[in-house]
Image (tube, rainbow, N blue to C red; front, top):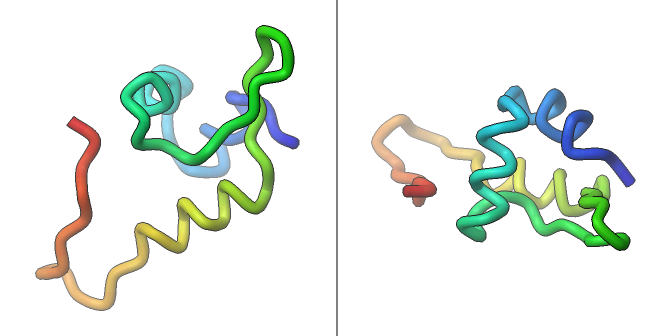
Length: 64
């Protein structure tokens, strides 16, 4: 499992953005181990796949 910092780096995001998305419920699924937040490789891959598009005209649901 990956830390918030490792996951943010892999996704090309800041830790601040990833944390905000987690609070809003629109980032990758995560696991809480005590107070620690971790992301599985599978959850990260699913999140990446969900963002794939074939055209710039295809929309993606943004995290507002």
